[in-house]
Image 1 (tube, rainbow, N blue to C red):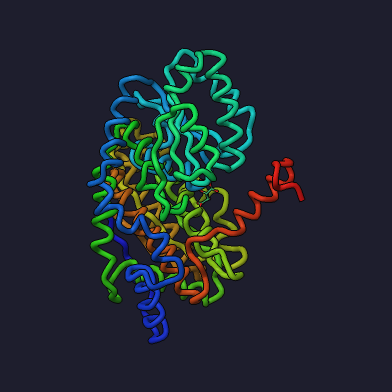
Image 2 (image 1 turned 135 degrees about the vertical axis):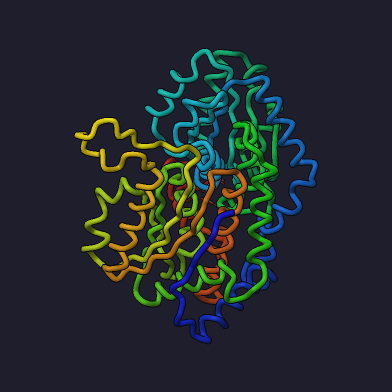
Length: 429
Ligand code: PA5
């Protein structure tokens, strides 16, 4: 089980403890702004597994694995990042080349070339299409969905097209997706009303694609439950409380950027998911810590100069991931440059690399904390996702009583400007 170690809050003030206790209650006792209406995800690991909808996700995933070779998920923001993060966390960035059940993601941008290339990849394969949108009106996935459906109808006929489409959306007539799915008889799953996009990974949004991949959704939710058990009681040894205080102390010390770094690309998409969860949750009232994704040692060869020598705006949280496989240096040729590492593993060098970076960063005055022993399993992924959802929400409550963790008004403004710009009926300025 992963091990969160936050040591550098030695100068805990009464003020931090009081604010953290209040923020913890705001979330777990649901006394904070929006907490009663938007925390479906806090109960999900312990309750969702017992629902009919959850069983339907499992049986549908089995049927999809029987009837289709490939899944394409169409969604953006919280409606795509979660399942992709879980799949890569466990199976890595090349999973689609290795897995018997590849999952591709589109609709998270407006790249016509990407969609064009995807058609080439999918040629001759049996494909199911999962359209995810809580509002059911977001432009990018809606445009992709319409083009895809048109392609399917023209190439395979209406009945086959409808049989391959699945909608995951809010059950409301305001959702264009909901209305279309009903009209065409697509399979449907509900995004719970009290789960915002970025907090929806433990619903059908994440679970259907995860289960199609062949990963265990039971284990994923069990990880979430295990983490809740660890963090739901307030205390200064509680890793969640320590982490939130650490972040706020850094913010108050004039460090507005948190480097969330890892030693393994399997975790990069997970960190991108974290970036959205934190950015949309606490980027408000002209406050907030900007999360920044870092992959080592790749970025040690590009950003390191700035991180150490440049503007001192950073603090860091390192996520240390354990490998599933070992590679040992052969040391067959005494004249080979790496002979001195004969018998040593990549893991050994990887650990040295993380220690070296930590030392360099600390020597430059940067605070660095660690999450150790992360295994590439569904369980650790569920645990870490729960940890970060709780951390983001609790952190927002630490700034002020008025910061609403679960809204994203500025994203909605962008969406409206987009509607206006495109001339959507009813939205023309
Ligand atoms: O996390 C959020 O709430 C947002 O980023 C949304 O997920 C994103 O804008 C997509 O919205 P929707 O799921 O309504 O298409």
